[in-house]
Image (tube, rainbow over all chains, first blue to last red; front, side, top):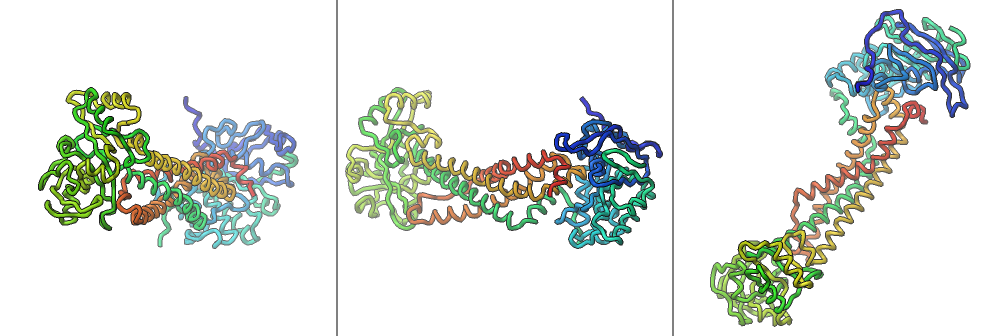
Length: 234
Length: 377
């Protein structure tokens, strides 16, 4: 019996690429609520900032959208994929969404280039193509020539840009960023935001960015504010 | 220099080498186990080879020895038992010999002495290639295998101090195997007297009549003579050589122990690695790695460490066996050969150690929920 295929077709621009309906998520066997019947939609190509107080469910929402976790109930559709019935969550994370975290999460013992290449394991790209793609992505995030450097040899902003390059390795149409500027100085924050704006313009990548920082949120097209696991303001 | 493209194998090597000291210490533990396994394997194999060579001396279909003797040289049977063998249905001939060993000189520390009646030389398959046979009762006569005679520069008519006195070498013999061709052959009755065991025999070499089943005749002999056993193959050698059985058992026991100890050490290392790298596995899952790929990464890293241990262990084993073979007490007895099987065993031991040691950490890493791994502090 064949399992449902992962949807990789590109739908029309403007239609919801992310659709969240009545999603509830709790932790500690229901004792700690995170999302409480959340409903929201994000259109293709949008740059959306998701804000709210600590514990409002921002990161939980991003983890659910990345298929890193499952909701207790509700419906989640991302780029045509029903996340409640995802046949290949690994392939989904590899090809549909790209993830960026606050702590950049590069592997310390690998170079910038190698950190990007490991995201292409299991794809059909040949070795030479992988290297060329990794170098191109580093050039795209203004780190051309830095491919040999280890994370410890890069600044915080540079590391985060490598992490963004890694998230784009398999040409995802959606970028999910969890506090990507949270541990950066103001100059690096500006660099990362400029990069995200450029990605959205040049690659038409849909960006969902979780942040506490209202200045960062102000750079987005749309601001969604969560409170107690629901949309408080859109 | 250009940065090579990171492949799965490259990542395994990279990860293993990034923790050099831990890798080396774990590999050293595996190496000790592999060394023990390979050394014992080589020693056991060497004893098997010696045993096989002794048993294949002559034209016999199988050998009869005392059941359960401590070693083949202490096997004893009586002339009456030999006569009964000779009269067993299906037996064409049964030749009784008395065996002993002595140190001849530094070059020939294990000189095999065979006492045999002159009329049994031909049925036994011994061919006289120079000189003449000894007389049945001549205590001062002997023959030598052509190989040892050549090494010692002795021709028929020469004298040599062996088996308790000066003997005239009446002839040189060929038996078709290296041990027989390096042995001394003595008339049985004087040799039994010299050994102070009149009428005693060590082994009987049995040839069955044409058309008879060797297995049936051997079984018949065992049934009719409970104190005797028959040996057709090297694997049956333990029936008449308890020391061989013991060393084989020790070999197997050491292998199991080495695998268990090695696996525990590898498991310890891989578990430590799992705890340290939980977040890393979460990152890999978040960029699209499957559970299987994470499991394969850990198993491959463990296998790489074990393989390194195996390489070191084999090197040490060859050194240890070479040293053992040079010990005066083992010179000539332990003739090390390095069969492919011994190295294959090292590889299998390393693979077993790596697989068993990494199985639990790998499965545990594979079962980690990506979000839990990413949130791991």
